[in-house]
Length: 206
Image (cartoon, rainbow, N blue to C red; front, side, top):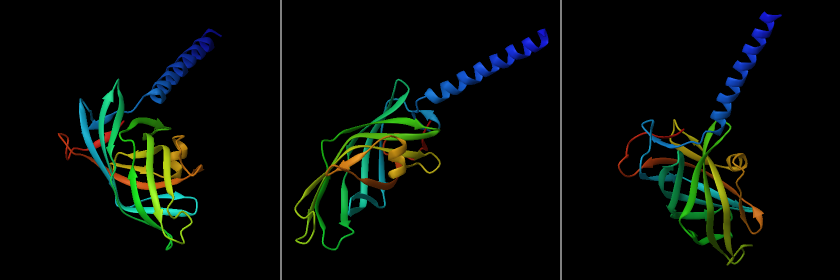
C-alpha cells in the first residue's frame, strides 16, 4: 500500500509540474526577435503584399501595392508596434462598373501587439480605418465613401518572415473588420523585414 501511495503521490506531483509548464507556456507572450535575440529599443519594419484585397459584400477591391510601415518594440516582454504609414496603390475592383477614385488609411498611427493563438504567433492591428471612395455611374456604391473599421489579426510565419491576414486568421484572433454595418474580408500575405539597424537580419516572433 505504501509503495502504491508513493507512486500515486509521485505521479500527481509530476502531473502538477507538467500542468504548470503548460500553463506558463500558454500564458507566455511573444516578443520581437532578430537573429533569435529579443529586440532591444525600437526598430522600423516594412511589409508589402504583392497583392491584397478587401471584400465588401458584393464588391472586392484589390491593390497591387499594399504596404505598411511599423515601428516595433518589446515592452515588459511583449511585442508591440505602431503602424505609422500604409500607402495603397493601383487599386481596382472586380466590377467593370466600379472604379476606386480614392483609397487611404485614416487616423494613423494604429497600435498593434503580438499574441499567441494556440501555438501560432499573431500580430493584432487595432484601430484600423480605411476610407474608399468608389466611382462609376452604374456602380451600386458609386460616389459612396465606404469606411472600413475594426481590428485585424494576422498569423506570423517565422520561417518565411511573413504575416498572413484572411478570414481564418481574423476569426482565430477574435478580430473583425466592418464596413456599411457588415463584416468584410481582408486577404493578404505580407513579407516583412527590418529597415534600420537590424536590416537583413532574420526577424521572428516567439
